[in-house]
Image 1 (cartoon, rainbow, N blue to C red):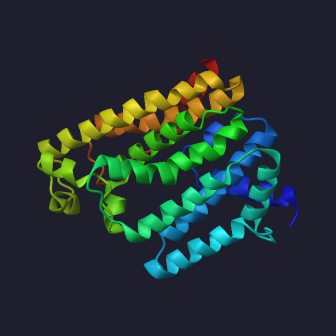
Image 2: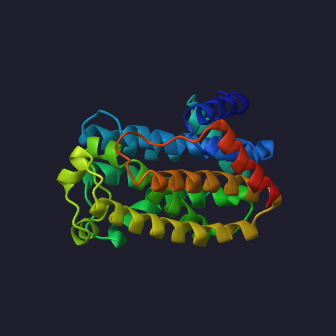
Length: 273
């Protein structure tokens, strides 16, 4: 498969599957946009394996096979062809891509997190690594800021996806914080939005916003279009968190959605920054 065809496929995947990412990367010049789409498609594949219906052993086998694929010729796989070409154009670090796989493997082995320090390490693998993979494409040597931004977005995902993660047998909210706020896993199982739940989630939201503010210092190191891209998807995540908070942190009836008009307002604000 030639690179042009592979890039077309990963861009189609990004438009179809990305909730917020696609609105940001449409602001990038073509070469950068295609490279970011290739990284997204690879991360999506890791997620799809980790969240799929196979046994944990089978998931780990597939993930380790994907790791081997990273180190070999891409063959006819569109995602791997596009990613290999992007890595030839930009200094996308292999350790970040392997960290994504490590995060997928971790999802097959660990279903609970005792403390936030444990959870943050996981977030650094599954989302901070995306930031570290993308930041050379944006054109900045700021991996720690990019990692912090990725962690912030993952923390918002965790708040948004509590019910979905429960159905997958996972609770990412730290166990010590659940206990401290008087929230049980039974509350999660039946979707109780008690005062204790809202207090816990307000605490989680504040920490997510603190990470987001710290991660967004990355914008000062990016060119205008790359900064607009990052500001767009970060703004969409912030708007989603604002909606969740306005709804009293009732995340059990399905994830909130932003209208196309609301999304375009975020894009406009990012461009005007």
